[in-house]
Picture 1 (tube, rainbow, N blue to C red):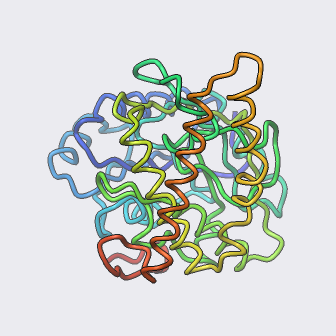
Picture 2 (cartoon, rainbow, N blue to C red):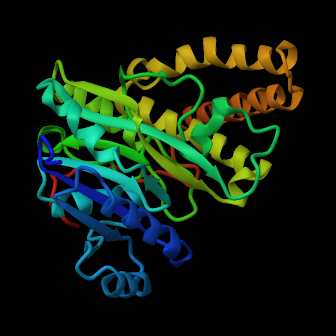
Length: 323
């Protein structure tokens, strides 16, 4: 099938530990019912991984080195500058796309007001999911969580593992903000949230569509199922939300979170304590996750900076402009 609009797929990689995952991700792109115009694999400041990828994927993908500062935002910005498609889709290097993934994403761009389309990211646990780990907090491991729409709907922003935008979004709103998003093992995030808010401000009337059937399967390693990782990631999410609040204002930054905290989480706690097949550990996980996330947000607001290690500059540059 031919895409309604030419779509580039950008995959960002940073560690040699994921070589097998990267192979699986790119193999899934080769099986798409709607083949991408190109696959751009961006390697984030790792020379040995870059050399391996250029050899391994010769003829399958365009492998480029990130020209921005280290981190996921910088790698994505490199991909934006390199890609040539009218739609730019992003797939995590440890995710596998369903065969109809790209077809379902690009199909929504037939609507002229649709500027971004994202899909569901469903966890594939390396080990069994811990019984205490609540589905309401699957965002901790980069996956779709209880509280997201169960069918196609308009949303504020997407899960980073599975998202796409018209090129126009970057041309009009700039690129992903440096200082937000993961840098190595640093668990900050919310760069997709801030970018989504900025795009809607730059393009009034623009819509972001979430279609859970445009699915990817996201690998979840054993370490991400540990309590220490869960709490660290929740705290970092609170810090990241404070950053977005400082940049975009709390009304826009917490628009979706208010419903999530006020409706979704109480239902999850009630189900864990009282529901059929109740699981008090799940309820405890929700309460702990919310408390630690709120603590991260509060600490960052009190400090007047969103970086736990001290102030860090933000950088928003036009697509294609390096450092």
